[in-house]
Length: 347
Image (tube, rainbow, N blue to C red):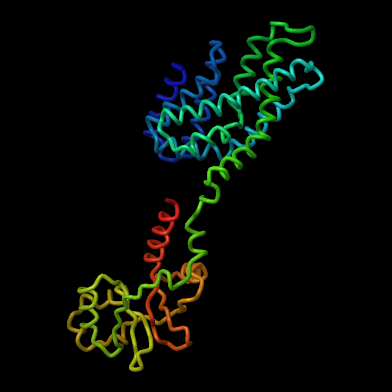
């Protein structure tokens, strides 16, 4: 633990001078190898030293370490796969006597019982909901790399202890842990799925894309419509922007049909020339209508179109095919309402 903590402390000092996360990752890999080398040289626990280093980094420099761990995970998958390949190569079924399979079954049975009973009574003590106490244990059956790593270390320490003519205590530990890991990695995911379904938690990983896919334009339309006539002077438009919170207004012609959109961005070129506000008309500064939609159209289709066209507002017209404007869509308003609906469904 001391070795892992010291090297992690040194690494945090490097982070003060390294602003590129890629360079920090390269140095981090070197420090990890130094930790492993020192632990091996002094005959110490490699896993504990490495875990202590990660613990120090995650708590002393949480933001930088999160970026670092994310980058390291991107290239750690091949190493992780190779680790399990090498571990699987040590599982020699022909060298496992029948009584050892009995130990494997007992290991799986009592490990599963321990997790189920422990999580149940642990949840009771913590005051967790009954559904958590009942089904949490089924979701944590899987066994991963740390157990195998510890088994390999134990096998090296116990390689001289013989339990049979062709089997050492170290080999027995590796065989038992590796075979139980294989069994639990097959059973574990199925039990996770079962626990999620039985607890009623399945299908709740709702995203904003899922919410948008179920909504229509009418669900997010801003029906508090304020319009302005195209023949109105710019001075009148300036009053609209100063008296209201809206950042855009539909511009209507004499037939009350939309003919353009007035945004604060379209006025910025004349904001400093107040003398022109009285004789310039809204029609002179308005922006053309790039596209429009109707209330019954799919929100996802319209939202994707707005992102593709790089527009923040889109008028909503009557379903009859006329140019009568019913309201306006705003990208910010869409995101707010979708986020609010996501929070409502998540709760």
